Image (cartoon, rainbow, N blue to C red; front, side):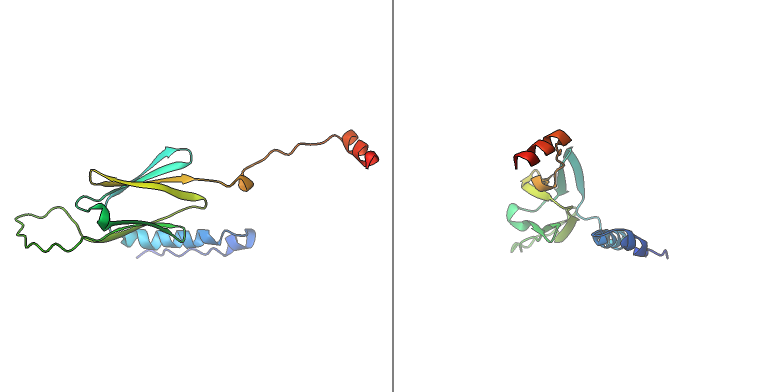
Length: 153
């Protein structure tokens, strides 16, 4: 048994607003080891500020799939509708059990769309940094200009 607890006290003393890092690390260390691997998925970087999550959802229809964003998390879930027909399988290798897969989203990451094709669910994401948070260049005025403006005033 390995210990997975970290003391984040030194981090809190030297920073402001980074308390979510401890929550994120705790979530990753506790949930990822026990989380099952169904359904399989890929995360692809499509541009500098864009990603695509592809989830294998063979056997599910569009109506049985759900994609939601809530509390900085992308939640992809599915539940197979009840089939009234009685079937006898000789081999059942296509898993259609219900699932819920969560992805924690960073600040300013938005879901731009989802497409279900050929047994794959593709969810596109992009980082949209607000103009107020983007770096901006400040023009440095010369001291002569400041004196002239003060005299005019």
